[in-house]
Length: 312
Image (cartoon, rainbow, N blue to C red):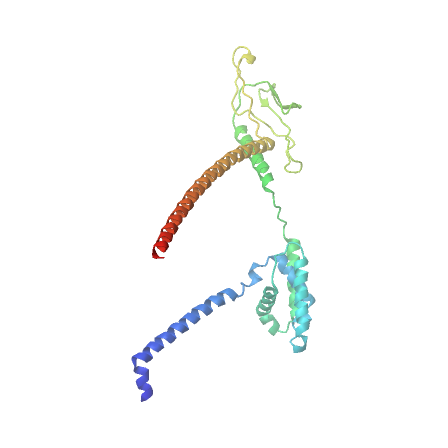
């Protein structure tokens, strides 16, 4: 009865509330600690196929020791895991992993293959089958060619030239113009000559990085239709046709990048100048504030000295 009375008293209810609050606080702190020490997600999803194949090969070499559950092999297993980790990181291009992550991948692999193990297959057989399957996949897979960014502009310019050719080829060109141009002072770049059948022909040899694209000869057609007028042709203003090649496109892009760089350089210089002026103003205000505080402190000290002299 006394216990029931104490439990129903106001003091007991307050103590219960305090204990609940302490418990909730501890649980919250334990949750934060658990989030900090929580293991990273399984690397079975994050490992790339080449890294996974390399890890399977290393595990297959030591599968007999890793699958043995005798307590006397604990120290040997630790050395084997360290050896697997070192061998994995010695390969170029692999991402850095911890021993805990690799062991977690091994445990996940055994869990996924649990049905096959129950059917009588060993881990060595499963590993050998997976390694063989992945090797066949890499051999039969089509290699992906990564084109650098600086070459993509050339490819884009080439596609533009081919597109212009297809558009203008469908149009009927009447008249003819004699024209001969040069690139960098070398041999003629383009020639537009009259022919007996009344057509206009032109040709140009493509210039660019070797092996990038195969363009032995590009047919260039004037962008504007040039018609023969009465009188001397030399008196008429003939515009040079725009020749869009990969080299010209790349040079234009370099020019634009240089202009953008100069603009950014000027803006950065202006920003530095503004920051310098701002710093100078801040230093002036700081020095003024310090001088004012020092003067106020001196005045307070003089007043305090006068009071001390009067009291003495």
